[in-house]
Length: 103
Image 1 (cartoon, one colour):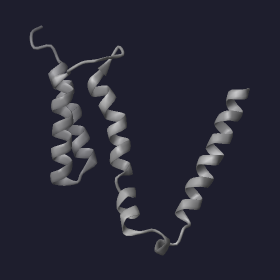
Image 2 (cartoon, one colour):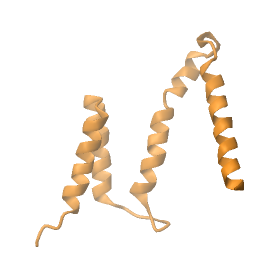
Image 3 (cartoon, one colour):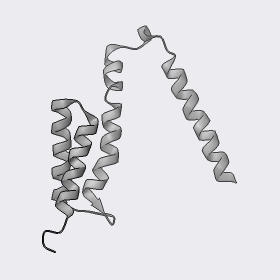
Image 4 (tube, one colour):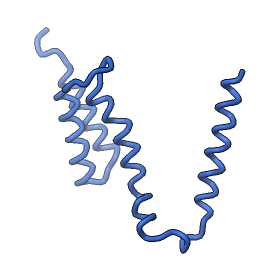
């Protein structure tokens, strides 16, 4: 039951801190701060993806299929700005490369 209260209290603290930050007038934030905040989604995406690319069983590994899919996703995202297309193509690369070639 203590874990429930921990999650509950942390969710309240997170909600109110984000809500308060969003309520700040825009003239209080400098252009540099606004620019820095625009990189948060990229940082979160990298934090979610990089461990899957380079860590397996608590050791650093090189997985060329996943790396190629990640590069393809990045390039398609840059060119088209379409998240669904870029993720779909990168997932297709992983699935096709993981299929056995010979029955």
